[in-house]
Length: 316
Image (cartoon, rainbow, N blue to C red; front, side, top):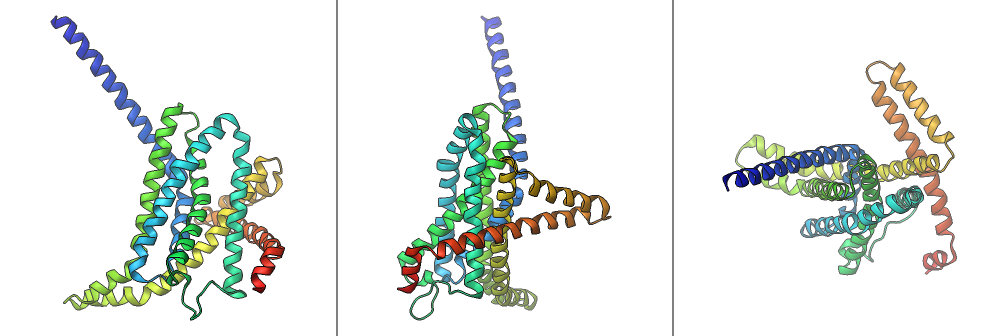
């Protein structure tokens, strides 16, 4: 009896060790996948605050929360099952689908630049931001943010999927689900902190310490400019990520020259510029991707704005 019990305990211990090793593998793979997607995560964090620019303070966090919920739904209910299915049944389809997303991001970025310099952003009769016009305008704003998030999230999840492609199916599923949750919490936690930083500054400005008050006043006066910079960075990020997706996509589809040239020059800069070569090479690749995104986005924008139904809408 005791021998049987000891044998059972040995089996339980062996199972526990195997489970612990498996968890370690999952943790390590999750860390690698998250780190690999870090560049797009930064872009996602930069893009989102522009959607709450001009929002009344009482609606900032509810809107961020709605976008975050939409983001986690994008990742877990749409992107994750579709990516796993396509990676198994039709891996060749991932690149064209991502390129459609890249076109949309490029179009969005080009449209924002057009509105900034030559067009007009949506506003009500008195010129107030669209988000102050009521529930319908807020719903449209959130919908636009979630659509943009869908593209950025798709690239994040595909990058993570490529990093763990060698893992068994269930391990891949668990890893990608963890990546989706961790990245969403991280991105929208930072976004919520950014958009409420002026309120933090206001609270600090009411403290007794003069030094703390000065910090608070600095935050209150500086956050509008900081949000403007973040909004501009978000527009550039749309063009960069969109152009990067397109460059990678045409490379995977067989037209390798543009991507190979950019990478070749990037490596030359990294190798021959002492100290800052890596950073300059990255900036070169980023600039080329942004230019591609801007050119392609402008072309799509010109086509869309000249469609018959868009012309009628603009005339009305």
